[in-house]
Every structure is written in structure tokens, then in C-alpha cells.
Image 1 (cartoon, rainbow, N blue to C red):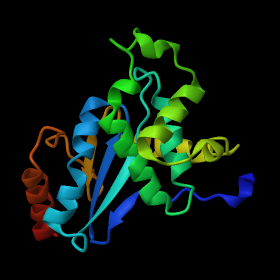
Image 2 (image 1 turned 135 degrees about the vertical axis):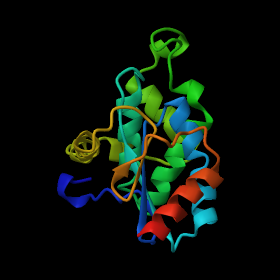
Image 3 (image 1 turned 45 degrees about the vertical axis):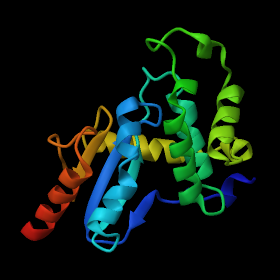
Image 4 (image 1 turned 180 degrees about the horizontal axis):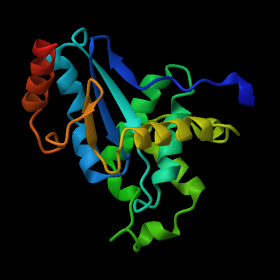
Length: 190
């Protein structure tokens, strides 16, 4: 795959004026919890009433974070990239124990190589992404996500933004109905 022939699909769902952005780290337990609620949120609010944007925020204490984040973005370069990236996120979330170390430092996963992690992602997501993972300048997509998070003062995951404003009152433990109510309230205020 030539470096100039790829495009990372935006991780956007829905088409509404209310922009709900979530910054996640794919192996984070709280991000995984939030990710599992996003489809229900789109259904609750309506895809024509909101636009969901997933932003990736790699975190160094999750030691495979960079590799898995690159896998998500590699998947986004494939045909139906947005949906392929979602499959990777869902596969990792459903099998988090395969992508984390005990106490962030020990355990059997410490012996895993980058190729092992990529193979696990492919296995659990059903997405063949190893070739896309090797795109020489794929890091430009990763850097974009990192810069966007920093520009918005995002330091941990999951963090939520609604129409450009960080919402510290929202968390992964909230009910979908709470998120939907916040979006509807924002819409009514506009």
C-alpha cells in the first residue's frame, strides 16, 4: 500500500447538528464501558439529531495503547473503514484482558510482541489490518488525534464534549438516558 494512497475514515456516526465527541483509549476499562453505550445513544437521540465523533486518546500507562490505537486507525483506512474501525474497538473492548497488563506492568501479556497484539486484534475483530498497520505515514492520523485532544485540554479517558465544550459532569457510569437528556437540553438551548 503506497503511503499516498490511503485515507483514514472519520470515526463519525449520525448527521445531526449536535456534536457529541468522546475521547477514548481503546484498552481503558472506562472507555470500553462508554463505547458499549454509543449505539444505544445514537438510537435514543436519533442519528439525524446528533453526530457522534470518536476521538482516540492513547495513554502511556496502558502499555499496548499505541499499538491498539494504530490498529483502529489502520482499520479506518480499509474499505468501509469507519465500520472496520468500530469492529476493532468493539473486539478489543470485548476482550480487554488480552490487551492489558496486570497492574499496568506484569502478567502473561508482558511477553506479547507487537505482532502478537496485532494478531489478537485481527482475531477478535475479524478485520485483517496488518498490512494497513504498516502504512509508513499512518502516524499522521495518530498525531492528529493527539493534537486535537491536547488542544481541547483532554488528558484522560473517557472524556466527553458536547458542541465543542468539555462536559466534566458526564462519565462512563452514566445511563444512556442521561447522555441523551444532556444532548436534548443542549439542542433546546441552541
